[in-house]
Image (cartoon, rainbow over all chains, first blue to last red; front, side, top):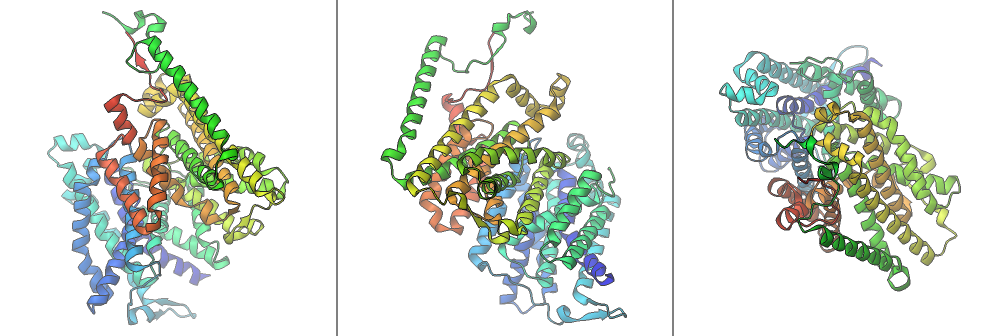
Length: 285
Length: 345
């Protein structure tokens, strides 16, 4: 049982990495990126494509992918998504939904439907003994540390820096923030850029931990979304804890019946939604 | 100063169509349109006697897409509730129809509307959960709900689990009768759906719905029951989506959770509505015809075809916000189903 719990926490920390980007984009500009999960898969496939050419370790590739992902996010928001923002959520959703379909089918065309993974070398097989016959894989532990660091960094960025203040300002009232001299479209672009960098990291780690296939995106989006809602909006630590809860719940479900793990996760999400729609740890900014 | 309150009632808001030609001519044109529509329906109804069975099958398929897209349009374009989870009701309609036919011994053709109503009843508690979320999060939340249904049916061995099951209730009926009656059912469903949505949008409640879409707070302050209205639209859209689903699997004879609860249904509906023009009845009709044509000529290209559909939806959203029919309406003042009201002073 303790083993299941620990595995769930480790799984949840990967979900947290998926969820941070979604939480950031929704928090700053009320934008729901339907292609979020597909971006994660795209990053994983980008890393897989690089490994066929260069003999680098996947973790190195993860770091190398950060700048292009950042640039991609910036350009996407600046030149495509900013034009779709407004009171009506439909245009931005149709565009990101369209992107999701384009990415899925492009990956299907390029890489076929087979699940693939990134070879993490010895990192994937090593484990840390915790006594009592419980062993934790080194790779999941590395993912947990990365996820924890990202959450802390993002929360710090939001709370303590000028950019974070700008994020909060445009989130609260775009017009007033612009009157104070902020360029909202650039700040939005930076938010998406950071979200995409996080997504790239999440994608590479997902590819190392398990397999990815072109149609995985929507499910990853739903996990990220559930983590954000369970945790409550407005705080990245809330998102992190929400993801841990989702991971543990799914792991418990898998323990009883492999066919019901994800179903059980969805159900707990719906229960939280009914009982506590503001999430477990909301923090209104 | 000429205030609105000083106007006589017939000069205030009217439900007359907003054509700019004079009244008698408009009335004559409208009568002609009704006659033409009636004739078209009559010709369509006689198809089983002179058409080929492949035409009927194709019509049933378009009918399902059209009804489903129309109901998505009602929900998102008029109700302002953008959902990515309408496939939940599409699948529920299919499964309810199948369960009524296979296990309760109901005639499958009668089970189609019954299945739709059953899904509508399920929509009431579902709305309680879904309405906790707004905007983009409502969309993803409804998607999660659809996934819950998909996974639940995939684990239900009575209906064949993940691999699905067959509609055995139609076993005794010969092929020609089955195809003919399925076709007629589809025709009735299409005509009924268009008529009901049209009448609803022209009614007082339709006006209330438009008011809510444009400004929820202002609508509520004018005494409109926003929550009740949203629930009504959600349930009606669910019934419509379930009708499409029941019809689809009546024609298909086989159902599986992955086919019934596939997000592609909603993706295609969004595509049709966005291409045709959201928030107008003609939009999904134009969209469904375009979708059908694209499907017919390009679906052999598989992934490239879907990739193209995705790109087209993005481009239309960015450059043609009103869709094709919206563009035509603005350019040529065309309108088939006038629902907008014009202030006559």
